[in-house]
Length: 78
Image 1 (cartoon, helix red, strand yellow):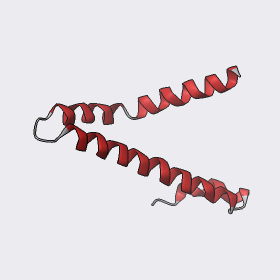
Image 2 (cartoon, helix red, strand yellow; image 1 turned 180 degrees about the horizontal axis):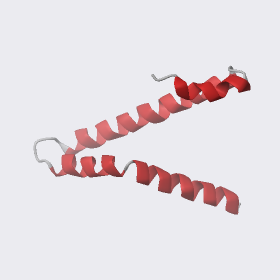
Image 3 (cartoon, rainbow, N blue to C red; image 1 turned 90 degrees about the vertical axis):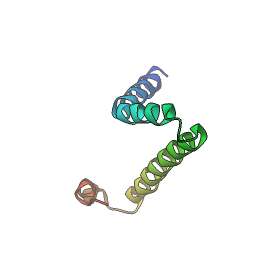
Image 4 (cartoon, helix red, strand yellow; image 1 turned 30 degrees about the horizontal axis):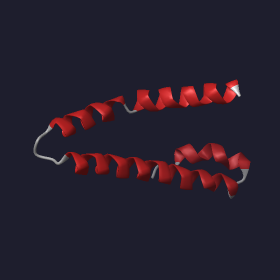
């Protein structure tokens, strides 16, 4: 059980560290009086859903690709 907690903690810390710039931009957009706060929050959530969804879909590729070719997936930009 402690291994799972360690993995979750590392995942959360990694997510926060890599999205710190996005957090600053989100704060700037939310402090702007021109854009409604609901549209900024919805845009952020939709963007994150697209990123997570595409990662989930692309991770399913590993079921169909032989394991010796999985190392080449980083060479194909999309």
